[in-house]
Image (cartoon, one colour):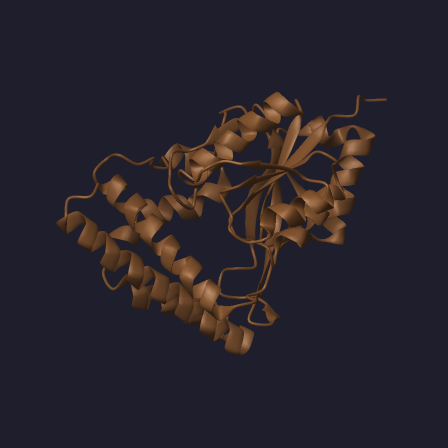
Amino acid sequence: MPEELRLAGYVLTRNEAPRIRRAVTSLLEVTSDVVVVDSESTDETRSIAKELGADVVVHPFEGFSSQRNWALDYLEKRYGPDYVLSLDADEWLNDDLVTSIQTRVLDGTLGDHDVYLFHRQIRFDGRVLKWGGFANIWLPRLFRIDAGRYENRTVNEHLKLDPGATIGRLTGYLVNDDVDSWEDHIDKHNHYSTLEAQARVALRTNRGAKTTISEAVRRPYLRRRWLRQHVWDRLPARPALRFMQIYLIAGGFLDGRAGFRRALFESWQEMCTDLKAETMTRKGYP
């Protein structure tokens, strides 16, 4: 019988008290080695995570890539896992995905691939989004500890895999939680647009990590990223185009009110990113 491979999981947090319980509980269903890397929260995030049995460590936030790579290094030194599972604080594994992971760990077939993609399911405004381009997104969230590290990017970071890494898919869903506060949602995405603007300016001045065409061909989950960097960011009127892409072309209108609001939010964030990037460029950022 194949040797059972060790799995550890982690969550990055900052003021995630309303959401952290579900994320940690979800990870604990597939591994007892769960780490919460907290960016100096001022709410009850750390106490809730500790109460659930997670290993909570505080590390000042220096960017999402840096934070994730720090978490991987900590896990490797503290637990020595073969594989790592990464969740965001507003995500959890549904029952089918939990079963898929448990089966792979118990029967020794986890080692069949270096990286596993999870099918993301987005809940927004009381509805699971089935249109608008949001229903067919696969993300690398379970991977061998030495399969790669996160690229140097402040937001929308990607796991940069070793060229020979093999990729598989698991059944079930990685669920992205619904909005529980519109004010918090707006604040969070306003902050994300600032980070995205910084990353865009860095790319234009050759200081950021660009996805190459060969990477996009080898790794299907990077194709959207390549199109954004090499095609989308050069188009005019991106906010309006983004709304039309989601709501009309990709059928977001079929998701009713939720689809309309999501399309508006996406176009609004695109406009905020554009305006902030223009300002940063004018002021000579960084």
